[in-house]
Image (cartoon, rainbow, N blue to C red; front, side, top):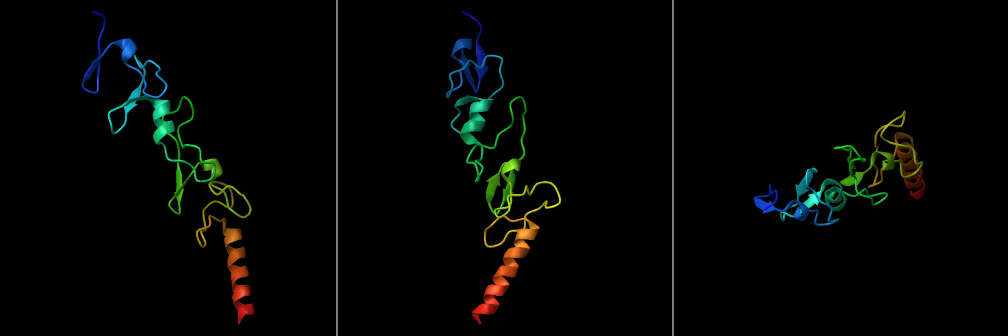
Length: 129
């Protein structure tokens, strides 16, 4: 007859209240549940359900000790801030003088590379005549 934890409408022994992924005890620890009401520690929930970066394929989740993170969405794709780079020159699109995305034909580009590609396409179209 030890202490009982109540969560998700059920009663648990403290040692039985664990993450379904890592089995770590969640007694007194922040937790969350998925759509199937399975209990997860916050870190495993993010690893399992967080959107994945289209560049590095890692989950976009808060840094250790943080509760929130920034996700960039461009052309219906998800990016970490540090992975959001021009596909041609590799410059970071989230800061600096090349800040911003100038998409062209499904490619994530900085302003300069977008202009260069448009010029190259114009020259090609002219020579094709």
